[in-house]
Length: 190
Image 1 (cartoon, rainbow, N blue to C red):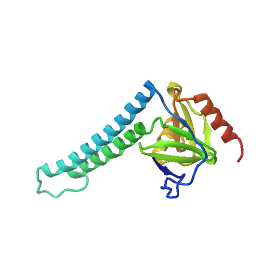
Image 2 (cartoon, rainbow, N blue to C red):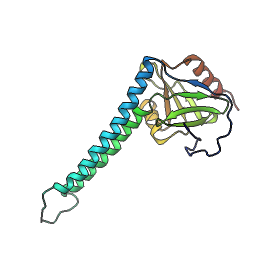
Image 3 (tube, rainbow, N blue to C red):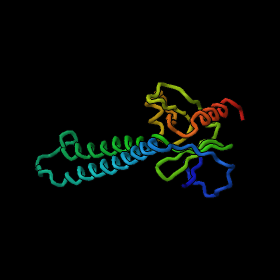
């Protein structure tokens, strides 16, 4: 795992951290997380292939000798279609890829798994709140000040704010202990 600090930059000085407690998904819940991550990866591949094929399809359009404006040029339409394939496809795919992260907690803050291979550090001072909004399936939303731009999708989906957020599933190990520790840390001034 690569450690990222709260500004999402690689931290070259891997200083020794206090002991971390890991909270992850086990059994059938782990299979759900893997399925969600696999679906995200396949979605990125599919949307990228569709965008590339759309761009390549421009070459096979019939040539028109009449002067074209931006409003009636079919090439512009296909380019816009390819861009939307990438934007929507990658946004949905990255949302699926990061939907239920593994969490590590220590004195410095929370580390969440993101984009399969990274850990992102969220200092306790950057956590805004917990248990806000109406979240389906017994999930808990944790809103923060900084994670990544794609984590803003969770904040917008569930609370209509642009706070980056992450979900804690109901099947995560030691969920009550995790929620109580987060609640204590964000309500205690440091």
